[in-house]
Amino acid sequence: SPRLYSGMQPSADSLQIGNYIGALLQWRTLQRDYDAYFSVVDLHALTQPHDAAELREKTRRTAAQYIAAGIEPESSTLYVQSHVRAHAELAWILNTITGFGEAGRMTQFKDKSSRYGTDATSVGLFAYPVLMAADILLYRTNVVPVGDDQRQHIELTRDLAERFNSRYGETFVVPEAITQKETARIYDLQNPTSKMSKSAESHAGVLWLLDEPSATRKKIMRAVTDDEGSVRFDREAKPGVSNLLTIYSALSGRPVPAIEDEFAGSGYGDFKKSLAEVVLAEFEPVRSRALELLDDPAELDRILSVNAAKADAVADATLSDVYDRVGLLRRR
Ligand code: AQP
Image (cartoon, rainbow, N blue to C red):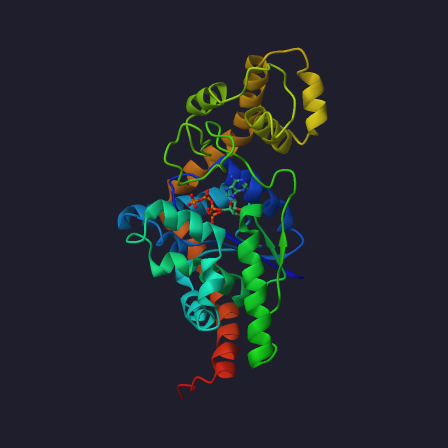
């Protein structure tokens, strides 16, 4: 079956609802139809300020949340990026065919580097999308399910695959992005014009998968809305309410107009209360399963190790081809 690749950074103790709706929900469904690879991309997380011991813990926690959300580590390949050395090695090769200007045009790099300032911006952050291209291309991936904030990175991956193939001979599959249009982007509840993010400065508008239910409820009740008082989708004029409707619809599986109808004439309070129930019904089983898995880190590490070996075999084969094509002398 065709191959699928995706990953997330272990950049927080918990994933947020944007990761869940924008990525995990799709992964769970798609894994049935694809030979799926899901990675916890810890090498990527090194591009942000971090603490070493905490990163290890966040890596385990992210993997546990994948499994708790329904990724099946027996049929899909769920592993930690740094366990497969070929990622870093292929990234180096791809660095040599990536334009400086090309990498500099990535909007995520521009956003993050302007946030950190020149001195705190590393070459690693600059090369982040090249490592991501390596992740995808190593597995000769056909499709990459991502939120639409990642589209530009997939475009770069495609360009690099085509460039390598035309320079050195057919080696890589040129992958396609798959994004779910309506739910592709979830916004911060306190700042509904910017994307919800694990690394947001304030956590007041971020819904964490592993938060206590009472905290989740509180954040939803305090979500920014507007003065109009009607539950109606209008991204421009009503970004807060529209974002809540998107979340409601994604988790309940009901179309937005049906939800608008249900809450026509009621206030935001009722709508938010109902949304909190929908969110908690979804989060609770995931949260308790994740905490259970984290109670047995040895078993979790065992699962990750078995899966890393599966990934390693595929990745090594691609990397050997690449080394041959670019002219590296084989060690005998
Ligand atoms: N707000 C979002 N709405 C929809 N999808 C989202 N994703 C992230 N935020 C939203 C999707 O989740 C996956 C994980 O991405 P990542 O961990 O590699 O990094 P990211 O996209 O930068 O996600 P965060 O949460 O904002 O992490 P930090 O703060 O660490 O950078 C991707 O598929 C992404 O599209």
